[in-house]
Image (cartoon, rainbow, N blue to C red; front, side, top):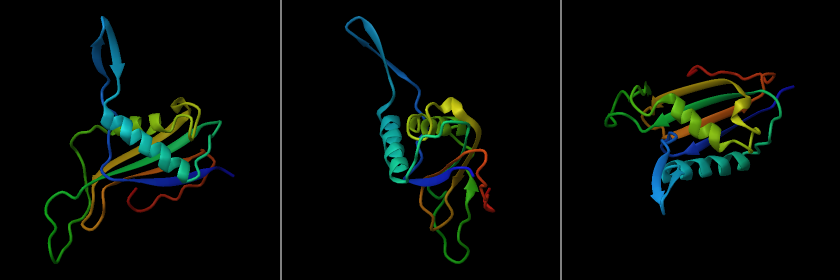
Length: 147
């Protein structure tokens, strides 16, 4: 029997920011942007609260990044969810999640053998969030109609 757990990070998804460089006393220092650091810290805390445990073997990851609804709410026919085809790139969204989960759900993100990332704008009435499911290849994941 495989392992599977899911959790949701409330708020607008954050992609891994490009490393920044600063000169400090004749040396160049590399650092991750503060927004990325805060998001990764939040992901870690929520994953731990959801009961995440370190998996030793191969890992599968599903990420659904949901940004705020596109356009104004309307009466009558509610706005449906639509794909997000603008920045940030899906791989940078995945990088932020995978880096945050190092040491929490796996030893290293090199263990991820399957990765599915979906970016979309929320449907009317839905909130911005990042939904994450981590499983072993043996776990039976039921993929809903949105996938």
